[in-house]
Length: 266
Image (tube, rainbow, N blue to C red; front, side):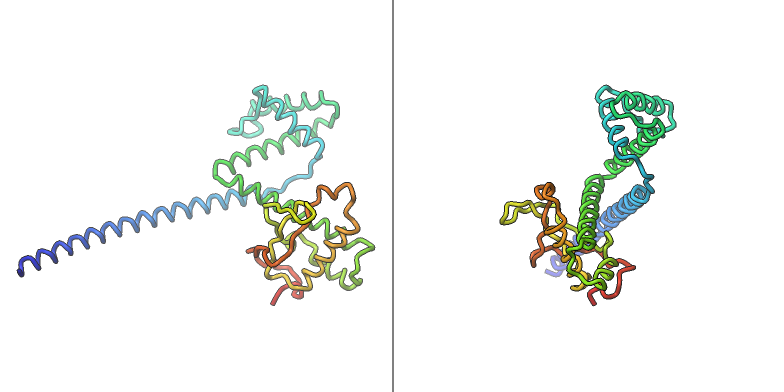
């Protein structure tokens, strides 16, 4: 009886020892996996910082559009940049001259210097896009770019509303509203489109929890003035109204450092 008791306890002890070893092994694997993920995220963040932090020189947009079109056409014929080399590499310089030649043969001609500058910018853009794709944040970048573009457009709409002679705000209120007319103070919108009762495609606003009621009031007034008085008839079909209600998601964006005290929810 005593022998069986001791044997059973030995078996339990061995099983517990094996479980402890296995548990320790899994903890080490988990720690190594988490460390690898952390290093990957740090590398991606650094690359993203480098890519997003580049100062983009001003460009001639029609010229840049033409260069992109020419580059796309040449790619179909098997001619493209070597993204593993820099722009000064012989192959890329040859392709650059090919782009210039095709661009000059187009109906709308631009100075050679502008075409070369646009081609170099496009080369850097292609290279940056490949880096994003290789490290898995291409879709994140595109989503961020679209979101940033929508915030910029929203800012422009509200500035038009603020500067309109139909704006009902007093001179003092307009001066205060001008202080929050920055892209960082504009709320983000959901990516998904919804349809309202008028059949229009709308976007739901992401609520900024730290924005004061007064600041929201100024923004909403300027938005309403734009929609009612400034929005041109030809743009009505393209315009996407904003949905503001209790079902709006909460934004996790932090409070900007330079925001006026009256614009912050205490």
